[in-house]
Length: 490
Image (cartoon, rainbow, N blue to C red; front, top):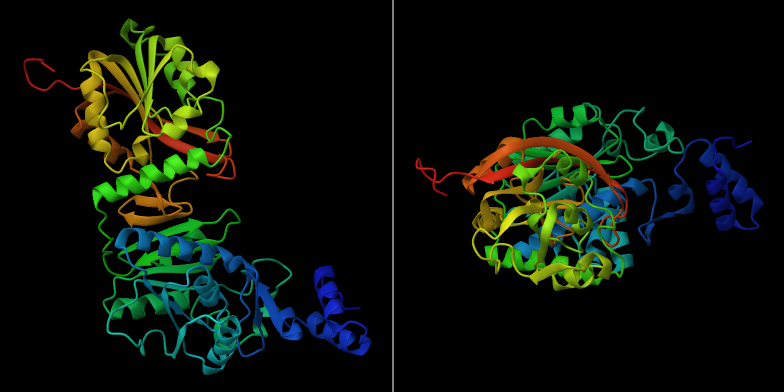
């Protein structure tokens, strides 16, 4: 009956064996008994490339695509910050699908694959020859035979993980994995035993390399517990719930960005984003927290006075701010964003292109300044906050939000370039601060907190930026300029 063979697998086998019914029936029986489809066909497809497969090597799971994307992001971030391509190692390269896919995407890198199993390496060598990429293969127990004097900049791996009950989906049950080489599935020393062994090997060598490891569908608790020995570890999950853990076994030495280069890279990224679509990237509605936060405030009777939307982007908040403004001004560093402000929104608004740390406005020009969804995108946020303090009136207010590591955004699809600092898509700068860190930043820039509220909202999908609706969580602050001395002078 072949009851364990899915319709998709039946169709694939029928297409492969054609009119040879005896061969087809034998293949269906093999699949019914749990043998991986790739072994029966002799190949599998992974991210648009076809790879040879046989029982000498593990068959890469399609879910590992998220690991490939993460590695490519880290490669691009390294390249952007260091002005060179990284040396990359794949631990447990096996049949080579992951390493080859990374190398096809970024052929400029040096990639070295290590594996303890010579049979799996033979399959990897065949796939390397088929695809024409250049990867050095080394038979090695983890990095015992690492061929270079210097450590790799980046290590990635999809080590064996989990128990027989930990499955990506029901179509690949425990029999599917037991048909593969015994060392490549279900580690005998616990669900993350292979991860711990790899991390210990890196630690013993004194390497500060960045490790990106797949943990599949293992729980957050198991993953966090197994990475306690790391100097730094960060768990992220894809939209499908697949876990990746970023690990440094020794204190990470993040690449040092020249401030001007980081700011220029960030600014160019935002400009190109706004130019990439005719749609409004942030949509037509004000940011989710703003109306609720402003509603109870009369700002000391300052409604209908001088209001500035600093970092206004495409103007999503201008209509709402009109309710609080006698005169409304908007500024942004992106000419592409300013050009997209709809005509109805810009009517009566004084619009300026300028960098937020060097505005053209006189001292004490505004009674209310909005700095919305902006602080986290600034490589030098303190300079901007100091400039906002200069241009706010002595009895004026600043409203700004600063997101922390909660929510769907922090760290998602991002490369870490410093403590709590990231590049999204290797170009957009983001920084996520805990509440006490935010308050310290504001205080150091000369602001006194009048109100601090932790607020949550759902943002819609953003064209060309974030494809799905996502949850935001930020501290939202109402601020006044702090007194500079005991006399009360500002």
